[in-house]
Image (cartoon, rainbow, N blue to C red):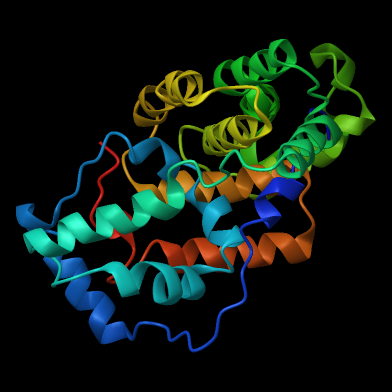
Length: 285
Protein backbone atom coordinates (compact mmCIF):
# COMPACT_ATOMS: atom_id res chain seq x y z
CA UNK A 1 0.00 0.00 0.00
CA UNK A 2 1.16 3.54 -0.71
CA UNK A 3 1.09 6.59 1.53
CA UNK A 4 2.01 7.52 5.07
CA UNK A 5 1.28 4.90 7.70
CA UNK A 6 -0.05 5.41 11.19
CA UNK A 7 -1.46 3.23 13.91
CA UNK A 8 -1.52 4.72 17.40
CA UNK A 9 1.54 6.89 17.87
CA UNK A 10 3.33 6.64 21.23
CA UNK A 11 1.77 9.81 22.62
CA UNK A 12 -1.67 8.24 22.67
CA UNK A 13 -0.33 5.41 24.80
CA UNK A 14 0.08 7.97 27.58
CA UNK A 15 -3.69 7.81 27.96
CA UNK A 16 -3.84 4.08 28.57
CA UNK A 17 -4.88 3.38 32.16
CA UNK A 18 -5.63 0.26 34.15
CA UNK A 19 -9.14 0.13 35.59
CA UNK A 20 -11.19 -2.47 37.42
CA UNK A 21 -14.83 -3.11 38.10
CA UNK A 22 -16.09 -2.18 34.62
CA UNK A 23 -19.54 -3.42 33.64
CA UNK A 24 -21.08 -3.31 30.18
CA UNK A 25 -24.60 -1.89 29.64
CA UNK A 26 -27.30 -4.45 29.11
CA UNK A 27 -29.40 -4.59 25.96
CA UNK A 28 -32.53 -3.32 27.72
CA UNK A 29 -30.77 -0.19 28.91
CA UNK A 30 -29.31 0.44 25.45
CA UNK A 31 -32.76 0.27 23.86
CA UNK A 32 -34.15 2.67 26.44
CA UNK A 33 -31.34 5.10 25.74
CA UNK A 34 -31.89 4.93 21.99
CA UNK A 35 -35.56 5.82 22.51
CA UNK A 36 -34.67 8.69 24.83
CA UNK A 37 -32.21 10.02 22.29
CA UNK A 38 -34.99 10.57 19.80
CA UNK A 39 -36.44 13.27 22.04
CA UNK A 40 -35.32 16.84 21.40
CA UNK A 41 -34.37 17.22 25.06
CA UNK A 42 -31.73 14.51 24.69
CA UNK A 43 -29.97 16.07 21.71
CA UNK A 44 -26.53 17.47 22.53
CA UNK A 45 -24.75 20.05 20.41
CA UNK A 46 -21.33 21.27 21.49
CA UNK A 47 -19.18 23.00 18.88
CA UNK A 48 -16.04 22.91 21.03
CA UNK A 49 -16.27 19.19 21.78
CA UNK A 50 -17.56 18.06 18.39
CA UNK A 51 -14.26 18.04 16.42
CA UNK A 52 -12.61 15.80 19.01
CA UNK A 53 -15.39 13.23 18.65
CA UNK A 54 -14.32 12.76 15.02
CA UNK A 55 -11.24 11.03 16.42
CA UNK A 56 -12.99 9.58 19.45
CA UNK A 57 -12.02 6.02 18.59
CA UNK A 58 -8.37 6.88 19.24
CA UNK A 59 -9.11 8.38 22.63
CA UNK A 60 -11.43 5.54 23.69
CA UNK A 61 -8.75 3.10 22.54
CA UNK A 62 -6.11 4.96 24.56
CA UNK A 63 -8.29 4.98 27.68
CA UNK A 64 -8.61 1.19 27.55
CA UNK A 65 -11.78 0.65 25.51
CA UNK A 66 -15.44 1.65 25.82
CA UNK A 67 -16.14 -0.08 29.14
CA UNK A 68 -13.19 1.57 30.88
CA UNK A 69 -14.01 4.91 29.28
CA UNK A 70 -17.69 4.81 30.23
CA UNK A 71 -17.56 3.16 33.65
CA UNK A 72 -14.35 4.59 35.09
CA UNK A 73 -14.24 8.06 33.54
CA UNK A 74 -17.62 9.23 32.26
CA UNK A 75 -20.22 7.52 34.47
CA UNK A 76 -18.88 8.80 37.82
CA UNK A 77 -19.25 12.40 36.62
CA UNK A 78 -22.70 12.16 35.01
CA UNK A 79 -25.86 13.14 36.89
CA UNK A 80 -29.51 12.56 36.14
CA UNK A 81 -31.05 10.63 33.28
CA UNK A 82 -30.95 11.09 29.49
CA UNK A 83 -33.12 14.00 28.43
CA UNK A 84 -32.64 15.96 31.65
CA UNK A 85 -30.66 19.20 31.84
CA UNK A 86 -28.44 17.74 34.55
CA UNK A 87 -27.55 14.76 32.36
CA UNK A 88 -26.86 16.89 29.30
CA UNK A 89 -24.60 19.32 31.14
CA UNK A 90 -22.70 16.71 33.13
CA UNK A 91 -22.03 14.32 30.24
CA UNK A 92 -20.74 17.20 28.14
CA UNK A 93 -18.50 18.28 31.01
CA UNK A 94 -17.18 14.74 31.42
CA UNK A 95 -16.35 14.29 27.75
CA UNK A 96 -14.86 17.77 27.58
CA UNK A 97 -12.55 16.87 30.46
CA UNK A 98 -11.21 13.72 28.83
CA UNK A 99 -11.55 14.33 25.09
CA UNK A 100 -10.79 18.01 24.47
CA UNK A 101 -7.04 18.08 23.89
CA UNK A 102 -6.40 14.77 25.69
CA UNK A 103 -2.65 15.20 25.15
CA UNK A 104 -1.82 18.16 27.35
CA UNK A 105 1.44 20.11 27.14
CA UNK A 106 3.45 19.00 30.14
CA UNK A 107 7.01 17.96 30.77
CA UNK A 108 9.83 18.25 28.27
CA UNK A 109 9.86 14.44 28.11
CA UNK A 110 6.20 14.31 27.06
CA UNK A 111 6.78 16.91 24.37
CA UNK A 112 9.83 14.98 23.21
CA UNK A 113 7.81 11.75 22.94
CA UNK A 114 5.03 13.51 21.03
CA UNK A 115 7.56 14.95 18.58
CA UNK A 116 9.20 11.54 18.22
CA UNK A 117 5.86 9.95 17.37
CA UNK A 118 5.12 12.49 14.66
CA UNK A 119 8.65 12.09 13.29
CA UNK A 120 8.65 8.29 13.29
CA UNK A 121 5.16 7.71 11.93
CA UNK A 122 4.62 10.80 9.80
CA UNK A 123 8.10 12.13 8.96
CA UNK A 124 7.12 15.42 10.63
CA UNK A 125 9.98 17.38 12.18
CA UNK A 126 8.73 20.96 12.24
CA UNK A 127 5.58 23.08 11.97
CA UNK A 128 5.86 23.49 8.19
CA UNK A 129 5.94 19.71 7.66
CA UNK A 130 3.07 19.31 10.12
CA UNK A 131 0.87 21.79 8.27
CA UNK A 132 1.70 20.15 4.94
CA UNK A 133 0.68 16.76 6.33
CA UNK A 134 -2.55 18.12 7.81
CA UNK A 135 -3.51 19.76 4.52
CA UNK A 136 -2.83 16.45 2.75
CA UNK A 137 -5.11 14.58 5.14
CA UNK A 138 -7.88 17.15 4.80
CA UNK A 139 -7.71 17.62 1.02
CA UNK A 140 -6.44 14.26 -0.27
CA UNK A 141 -5.32 11.61 2.19
CA UNK A 142 -5.77 7.94 1.43
CA UNK A 143 -9.18 8.86 0.04
CA UNK A 144 -7.44 10.00 -3.17
CA UNK A 145 -5.90 6.57 -3.65
CA UNK A 146 -9.19 4.87 -2.81
CA UNK A 147 -10.99 7.03 -5.39
CA UNK A 148 -8.47 6.09 -8.06
CA UNK A 149 -8.78 2.38 -7.36
CA UNK A 150 -12.57 2.57 -7.17
CA UNK A 151 -12.70 4.21 -10.60
CA UNK A 152 -10.51 1.49 -12.07
CA UNK A 153 -12.80 -1.19 -10.69
CA UNK A 154 -15.94 0.61 -11.87
CA UNK A 155 -14.56 0.72 -15.40
CA UNK A 156 -13.72 -2.99 -15.33
CA UNK A 157 -16.74 -4.71 -13.84
CA UNK A 158 -17.03 -3.32 -10.32
CA UNK A 159 -17.34 -6.02 -7.67
CA UNK A 160 -17.06 -8.61 -10.43
CA UNK A 161 -13.88 -7.16 -11.94
CA UNK A 162 -11.19 -9.62 -13.00
CA UNK A 163 -8.05 -8.01 -11.62
CA UNK A 164 -5.80 -10.18 -13.76
CA UNK A 165 -7.47 -8.79 -16.89
CA UNK A 166 -7.08 -5.10 -15.97
CA UNK A 167 -4.49 -3.17 -18.00
CA UNK A 168 -2.63 -1.67 -15.05
CA UNK A 169 -0.34 0.38 -17.29
CA UNK A 170 -3.38 2.15 -18.74
CA UNK A 171 -4.12 3.53 -15.29
CA UNK A 172 -0.46 4.12 -14.41
CA UNK A 173 -0.62 1.37 -11.82
CA UNK A 174 1.62 -1.60 -11.09
CA UNK A 175 1.43 -4.97 -9.34
CA UNK A 176 1.99 -3.20 -6.01
CA UNK A 177 -1.49 -1.69 -6.42
CA UNK A 178 -3.23 -5.05 -6.69
CA UNK A 179 -3.71 -5.58 -2.92
CA UNK A 180 -5.51 -2.25 -2.67
CA UNK A 181 -7.69 -3.03 -5.65
CA UNK A 182 -8.44 -6.46 -4.22
CA UNK A 183 -9.44 -5.02 -0.84
CA UNK A 184 -11.91 -2.59 -2.39
CA UNK A 185 -13.27 -5.34 -4.63
CA UNK A 186 -13.75 -7.64 -1.64
CA UNK A 187 -15.60 -4.93 0.34
CA UNK A 188 -17.20 -3.21 -2.63
CA UNK A 189 -20.64 -2.66 -1.12
CA UNK A 190 -19.49 -1.88 2.43
CA UNK A 191 -18.17 1.63 1.83
CA UNK A 192 -20.37 4.70 2.05
CA UNK A 193 -20.38 7.17 -0.83
CA UNK A 194 -17.65 9.04 1.04
CA UNK A 195 -15.22 6.14 0.61
CA UNK A 196 -12.63 6.21 3.38
CA UNK A 197 -12.59 9.95 4.10
CA UNK A 198 -13.37 9.22 7.76
CA UNK A 199 -9.98 7.50 8.05
CA UNK A 200 -8.25 10.71 6.95
CA UNK A 201 -10.36 12.99 9.15
CA UNK A 202 -9.85 10.96 12.33
CA UNK A 203 -6.08 10.98 11.86
CA UNK A 204 -6.18 14.69 11.07
CA UNK A 205 -7.81 15.42 14.43
CA UNK A 206 -5.58 13.03 16.34
CA UNK A 207 -2.41 14.53 14.86
CA UNK A 208 -3.51 18.06 15.78
CA UNK A 209 -3.92 16.89 19.37
CA UNK A 210 -0.46 15.33 19.40
CA UNK A 211 1.02 18.43 17.74
CA UNK A 212 -0.44 20.52 20.56
CA UNK A 213 1.34 18.37 23.13
CA UNK A 214 4.53 18.48 21.07
CA UNK A 215 4.50 22.27 21.08
CA UNK A 216 4.10 22.74 17.35
CA UNK A 217 0.76 24.49 17.93
CA UNK A 218 -0.53 26.59 20.78
CA UNK A 219 -4.15 26.06 21.80
CA UNK A 220 -5.51 28.80 19.55
CA UNK A 221 -3.60 27.54 16.51
CA UNK A 222 -4.69 23.96 17.15
CA UNK A 223 -8.31 25.06 17.52
CA UNK A 224 -8.19 26.91 14.20
CA UNK A 225 -7.05 23.73 12.46
CA UNK A 226 -9.65 21.64 14.28
CA UNK A 227 -12.47 23.85 13.03
CA UNK A 228 -11.71 22.90 9.42
CA UNK A 229 -12.72 19.26 9.88
CA UNK A 230 -16.45 19.34 10.75
CA UNK A 231 -17.45 20.97 7.47
CA UNK A 232 -15.58 18.33 5.48
CA UNK A 233 -17.05 15.52 7.58
CA UNK A 234 -20.62 16.83 7.52
CA UNK A 235 -20.56 17.23 3.75
CA UNK A 236 -19.88 13.50 3.47
CA UNK A 237 -21.67 11.81 6.37
CA UNK A 238 -25.04 11.89 8.09
CA UNK A 239 -24.56 9.32 10.86
CA UNK A 240 -21.77 8.12 13.13
CA UNK A 241 -22.01 4.45 12.21
CA UNK A 242 -21.33 5.17 8.55
CA UNK A 243 -18.46 7.47 9.51
CA UNK A 244 -16.72 4.99 11.76
CA UNK A 245 -17.42 2.08 9.42
CA UNK A 246 -15.49 3.97 6.74
CA UNK A 247 -12.78 4.67 9.30
CA UNK A 248 -12.40 0.96 9.96
CA UNK A 249 -12.37 0.13 6.25
CA UNK A 250 -9.82 2.86 5.69
CA UNK A 251 -7.59 1.47 8.39
CA UNK A 252 -7.70 -1.96 6.77
CA UNK A 253 -7.09 -0.43 3.35
CA UNK A 254 -4.02 1.32 4.74
CA UNK A 255 -2.78 -1.99 6.06
CA UNK A 256 -3.42 -2.10 9.79
CA UNK A 257 -2.55 -5.29 11.65
CA UNK A 258 -5.42 -7.78 11.64
CA UNK A 259 -5.41 -8.17 15.44
CA UNK A 260 -5.55 -4.40 15.91
CA UNK A 261 -8.34 -4.09 13.35
CA UNK A 262 -10.44 -6.60 15.29
CA UNK A 263 -9.92 -4.63 18.49
CA UNK A 264 -10.83 -1.35 16.79
CA UNK A 265 -14.01 -2.91 15.38
CA UNK A 266 -15.06 -4.03 18.85
CA UNK A 267 -14.25 -0.66 20.36
CA UNK A 268 -16.13 1.29 17.69
CA UNK A 269 -19.22 -0.88 18.19
CA UNK A 270 -19.07 -0.38 21.94
CA UNK A 271 -18.37 3.35 21.98
CA UNK A 272 -21.33 4.25 19.74
CA UNK A 273 -24.00 2.76 22.00
CA UNK A 274 -25.20 2.98 25.57
CA UNK A 275 -26.31 5.49 28.16
CA UNK A 276 -22.84 7.00 28.58
CA UNK A 277 -21.95 7.28 24.91
CA UNK A 278 -22.21 10.88 23.81
CA UNK A 279 -22.55 9.65 20.24
CA UNK A 280 -26.03 8.49 21.27
CA UNK A 281 -27.07 12.10 21.80
CA UNK A 282 -24.79 14.16 19.53
CA UNK A 283 -25.97 14.23 15.91
CA UNK A 284 -23.53 14.35 13.02
CA UNK A 285 -25.29 17.41 11.60
